[in-house]
Image (cartoon, rainbow over all chains, first blue to last red):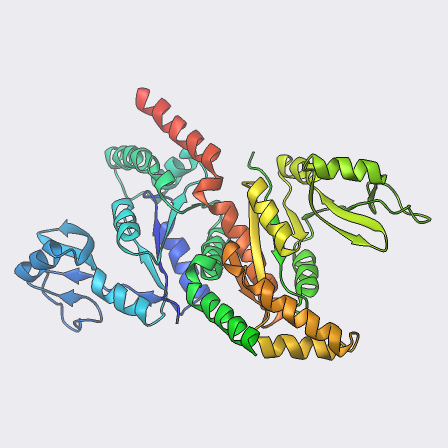
Length: 208
Length: 208
């Protein structure tokens, strides 16, 4: 069986990554989901391994040291990370996993998993990005300037990704992400076992 | 502007290549078409550059020698070939061209054009291929055996293609071919100019 793909979508704040990923999952609900590891205490009704993997700071640090976290962030004194082992397991079972990662996270994924597919989501233009960020009405002008500066820096990494999708329109961008996944599954380099089987059958028939 | 892609689909006789290609063109009628070069005389109503490029044997031989023919075949004393120059021109204009090539033709395309995408179409199984060939009712048993032997030999080349699509079902196979084309257009390696523009704009903004 072929391994499931680990597909990451990265992009600066304001490119519409969340909406595109949500639309992709609506169109194809079979993707596996990455559950984050956190050091914060579970809230009422939250289940370990469902909402989060709840870990102590010591456990989290150990996971980090052992390379079992692709990327992590700190928020009000707690760590939140993307663990590698569940990704590995889902992929081995043939499940494709769709990941919402930072640029650094996508690069770490690419480095660690041959079954990775990295997609950079771009806003149609810098002006459009600025319009979207200001249109949200949630950030201060300073925060928006900081996000725009971050976006500028982040787009310098586009070339290190496998694919770039311009998000002119959520529907079209979601279709492109799905097309990329379909195409990647057809790549000969990802079908070595199947191709070897075909050639083996050929050789056996020649022998007859 | 990005170059148009030159997409070739190859596959042994009986894999349903003709039906899949026809379905792909129905779904997306914007592909450019390769017009063959032939040494046979034009029939009534046939127009040069529309039905065929009509050439003398000397002209055809010259084209062959100058590497202007990707692949050719002889049929009742006349040559039929796929010329490279119109492909180059359509691609430069940004038109994607869908090609029905032999395995050798696809390999020549891959060698000569960086904008090539090569797809191998496989029957779901050898048994299914045999069933399809016998089901046509047009060939003698000997001819079918020869086609099957040819198919066996041809499938040994799958691994040299970019993609492999199993034709379980014409509709699904056509969708996979279209997904491959969509994905290839999103590959960062095919969007170098666009990415450079984005980075250039970034740098200019930094300067302000």
